[in-house]
Length: 292
Ligand code: C5P
Image (tube, rainbow, N blue to C red; front, side, top):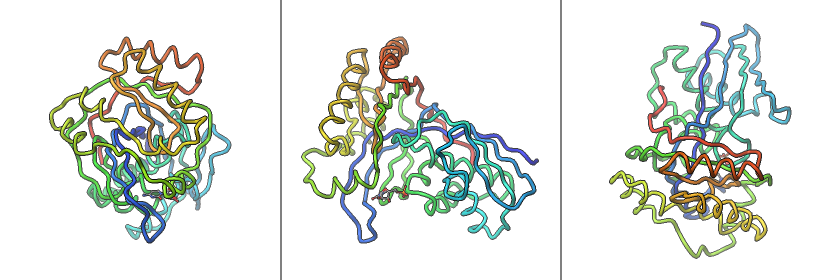
């Protein structure tokens, strides 16, 4: 088969805690992650050429090996000792880019899963996740998907009971964030509040959606410049006014999401936010883990 089609779901951070800076410049994190149905579609075509190319409608995305999807293919071949092949990866991007939703990491994870299936290598999710570490910190989680606790740089993963099914509204305000810059900011402050990660794990074990929603917390919200923090708060307020059980920023942002037990309320929130923010989406939690 010369063509593979697959999907890459977005991830949310139900909690995000930064524990400290490490010797290697990265940070030790503790995060509860959840995949959602908003996804990119990928088409991998073994084209008989000599390079890996990435195509998409977004002209600013790199088309060479610096794109995480291409980097994943190169890392896969290196790790398995297979000779590289000519490959064209076409991305149909629906997950907003640089948004805190791990879109690029999820594309990379989808490429790893697709190549594992294509070659019949039978690598386990853990083995694939270990290859993904070299591509980016969120890639190991994206290989596993579902609901999981991620620790260390993001590569130490513990699968968790699936989050109760609910509707999710995601809204990306139109300002850019620099992940390295936010990590630098967080090094310079003493955090006042931390997420209740243990409480979040208990809420998941009990299957309590309201318990999950009450414990959404992301320390990066506390180090945003004031104007941006206000914007994030405005979006959260609209989500909560429309009936969200809880709302929070994902990753280093700027996407804000709200969890809803009633789909009609989520639809209303989505409609209201779309009037101001073009990049607003309605999705569901996607509890099943992707096939490896
Ligand atoms: O691993 P990745 O390339 O996705 O990380 C992007 C940037 O995010 C890193 O260069 C680093 O500044 C920051 N980062 C970090 N600690 C982590 C993950 C990411 O400091 N655990």
